[in-house]
Image (cartoon, rainbow, N blue to C red; front, side, top):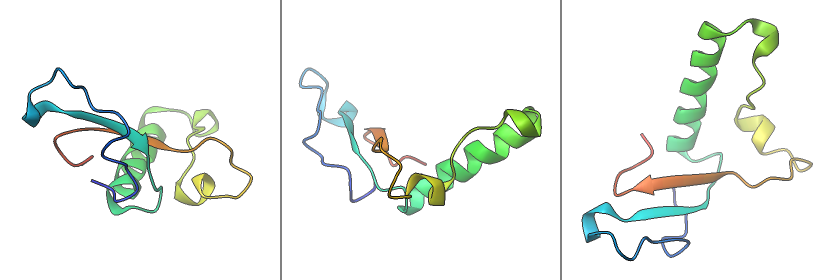
Length: 80
């Protein structure tokens, strides 16, 4: 799990301890996030025309003028 995710950001209180869901801001430079983005971009380029791929890569998500904060959702396991 990326260090940037705040464990207390959102926990499903009614879930058993092993099935807690955590949603929170994440760091696009974290290894698991970079891996997920790379897989997503690879999939997008394989299954979409080149002019129809609009996903941002890690450098695109870390630009100072990029306003939305990337979020991740974890369920008792690392992102990947």
